[in-house]
Image (tube, rainbow, N blue to C red; front, side, top):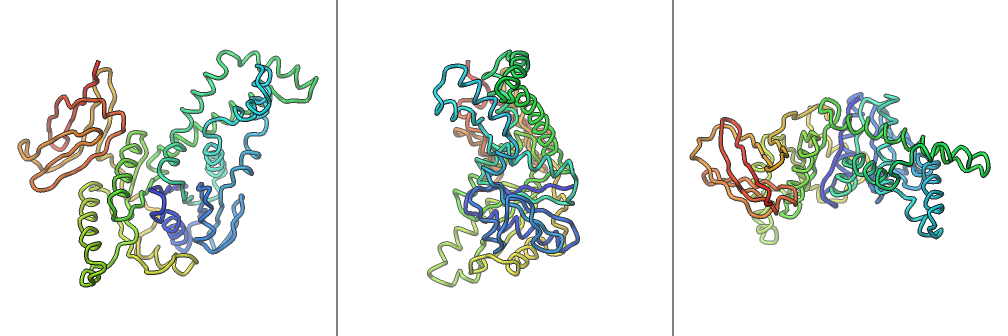
Length: 388
């Protein structure tokens, strides 16, 4: 099975790109599911078809599913939520407060993850295409297992034996399955860990960043790329959507936009190289329905298989140590004196001749100082020092 997840800033065209990819794959003979984790439910609009919380066949070899929070939480979290609700009530909390706290951080995202674990385990599809929520929610989803496990450990320190033992008594007297709830928690975390390892396997999962040739969108795409690298996820392509044709440069109304678009496209090439970069021209109309999605899929991939792994190499590596934060960037074919490097807040600026490469770092690097850097073909190594 292959899994491809599309991410990017809200409004860049993730949904249409994901749907077009899924349709192209299905037409090539792959049994494909396009699965939307975005609560905005725009996948139905893009396909111009009604989807349900369960996989629904919408074309030959193509199934679609739109994530429904309440349906999924009821399906995956019943006994566990009852366990937490009851424990909080035992601790003297009012009903309303206990009800609120019984919803684990990331429960919605985890429900989406559990669907994916189910699909992977049952192996019914050749390809799963994920239309994710905007970048921030995607990163929350991908880092979820550690976050939720940490929260749960702090919420119930050392209570495993007590919950399981007392839970059996409570179930016999009240019918509330506390012990079953705790067992469900363990099973759920096992599943979350399994699917996270699947997502971190570059031979199975690829992440594709969708962007527009606009400054704010590109900045968020760079930051998403850095975080995805930090978490160990393989990004195999960037898709630049809604590119206006150069012919509009002669139009006074569009000329200024075309000029800035040209600069931003060059920035994308410089910043994301050696990742493959696919461009999709602006169609000049609202995109929905199979015909337009087929057109977009053919524009992006042409004769290539959309399920192909287009890139599987880390262009930069981030390592954490006791005193330093080490960044290794692959920059081939330069001499030791051919570049300059500066750090501004959470951004590294690498100047190569008349070109500048901007590397957006995690926000906490604001508080780290540039200590040193060195170049050994083809790696540039940067050390950021923690302040004591």
